[in-house]
Length: 324
Image (cartoon, helix red, strand yellow):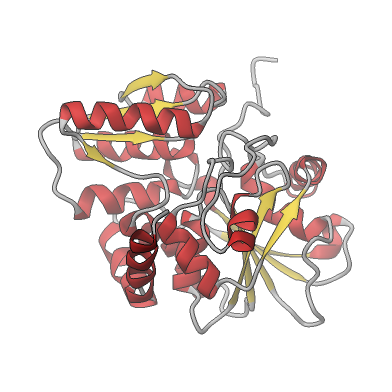
């Protein structure tokens, strides 16, 4: 990341606002679901009593919040004849494939070999061209860039683009409209698109805290270094929360506006998945429950009277198999 690109990202980050997110919400409202919230007591999960509101984005079109950013990109940007292309751990690819199908746009999706069968199957079901190649998301991204250069297709970035960020931010906007009593919002961090969007949406209204796996501490290491840097990419949530680096733009937004990022073990993520199913009969993928895991494991400890809002961000998982 050069000094010039860092300055450009900082300037752009400073220009983005809650109003931008609200404008996007009006644009995409006819294409995405206003997903429900459910408020429970943390004691239901065996934790100390306290108010917890879950934003159920696993019920969104394509199985995750990513549909919001996908529609924002496709509706706001000029689409060439070659269509669109996206690299993804799986959820973003499914969202772009879904949005492209709805809008009648050609799409080619690149995913790494670690993508879950559930995500690959979902992408194929939406009719997009699918390329499964590369060991990690970063590898698939590099492959997609070559295709984009050759074809002239429009790149739809998974997290580091204003339209993607603003679309993701509508999740936070809805949450605060549905549960205005929420004082702190927690969301998972991969490349940072969801968390940075929520930072915009909740500006001046609620605190925002990120959570990421210990095995993929991309934002934690970026914050320590003062810029995006390469980080490990090993975690049970590798197919959704493990890019090699966070984005330049998402870094600038989160470093300026989030109240912190906590790390969560794979064991805590698995336990959060189990408890979410056991206590509420809600199924979510590992990356989708990472923010909840931060609370249930004690990595984030709410203050007395604090009302937590937690985004359950996705459910593209093979945890449920009705053929068994």
